[in-house]
Length: 316
Ligand SMILES: [Zn+2]
Image (cartoon, rainbow, N blue to C red):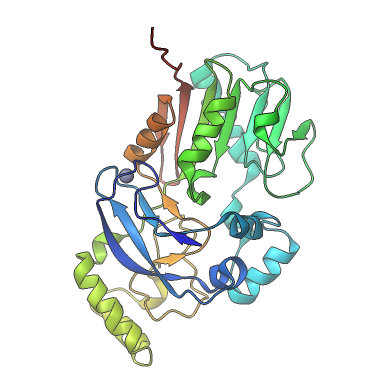
């Protein structure tokens, strides 16, 4: 694990930050050390929110090698008895249908060239609009869907993909810009990229200024014995029963009510998502990786976009 001092999207160092917790699952399964707290930062330049703790390559392998497999689920449910992997993964059939519809609307032709599904698990999300070869690059060793071919090092692809799918991947990456630049380097000239990330934002407006929240956090953290009572009183004052107040924004991976919580007013807690994108942050990071956004769409659950690789300018 390491700490970042700059925004993983735009590179700016100016940010606001709130103290946050590291989930028991992340401590035991990923970090394998007792790191209880971290910081949730918000970049003042592009609006990306990110945890300052970033996972090392070894920790990433540990987390995603058997992602939502038997061993992973056993470990996660032991620490988070209410964890529901189907809610986290979503309905694959409807996601594929939606993706196909979005791409046909904006591309208006089928893609016969090779496609690379980057971080695509078993490759089952690849929609019918892609009629050519289907490469999947994924850290897990899950068995692949029909027609999908595994590629362990995308720099060794025999042919440049004309399209890359990057669906629900960027929010997991410690260095998302590096990965986007690698993708740009293997993509065919004029190649296209599809990006989808969760529309997932903590309700920071409830917390007040970071300095005030930090003082409250430290006070509550130092007095864990009375904190459930304090939290309950705050929720009652807010006029909402504690049991129904969501702990995080809709769709958040960290809204886990099963973990013991001494700070339930807002549950800033690191699980496996470490980046929370805003539209501006998405545009900024793609621009830095030499992509130009050609279509953008959002709803309550996600942001998605199409981007084109910008040709490198050669000096005369
Ligand atoms: Zn930024």
